[in-house]
Amino acid sequence: MINSKKIVVVLPAYNAEKTLEATVRELPELVDETILVDDFSTDATVALAHRLNLSVQVHDRNRGYGGNQKTCYREALSRGADVVVMTHPDYQYSPLLVTAMASMVAYGVYDLALGSRILGGGALRGGMPRYKYVANRALTAFQNVVMGASLSEYHTGYRAFSRELLTALPLEKNSDDFVFDNQMLAQAILYGARIGEISCPTRYFPEASSINLRRSTVYGLGVLRTALQFRMAKWGLSQNEIFRFNPRPPEVSLPPRAIASSAAEKR
Image 1: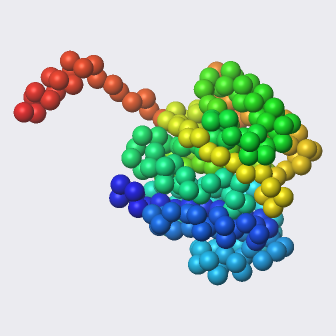
Image 2 (image 1 turned 45 degrees about the vertical axis):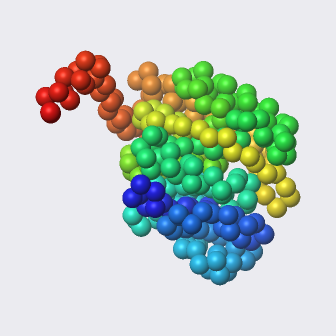
Image 3 (image 1 turned 120 degrees about the horizontal axis):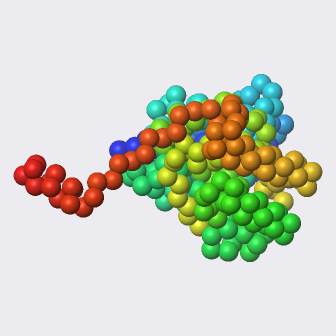
């Protein structure tokens, strides 16, 4: 626990047998529960997860990366999670940062914390293919302009969420494919979530999962479409179902004089 908040880590897994144990071994002790959702793997991921004493959910068919995450969040919330940290079990992101990311949310500083591969300049040093790096930077620049945010990266798979944010967003309406991540982040921005980032080193190696050029292209087109749908929803010109929800009420900030006056009244 952190700040009396239950911390649950979710691992959306598909054929992660070779990297799962290394990922789990680096999770900090403060994690209250780790849930692995297996998306119909063909290797021994499930058997290994049981040996590692993880909570395991297994899909009866392959439901895709987004479909896997939907199960992850439903399961974590049903088990009383206050903060949910999602990371990949392919050991591409450092599990050692779970404490920092979960703390950003558990102490109420942010509703959503992102582990950015771009901050600190470690993406290329970690082996990110150059074409993916260029695409990442181009798509992020486009999204920042269209969506009015200032994030270093929209495409990280390392995220920590508050329970309140997860229950506020219509996640079940999102894609079951890889663009789910981007749709979810766009929804959080439209909702008015407080979003923070932390530098995260990355590792690219043969056993780490990575989508090919064709799937990357499909994902990139989906990102562009999501950004444009977001802008139309922001302008009130579209009723796309993934952006059909109530925004977060703006926080009221009292001027310093009013705060001092209120404190004096309490004394």
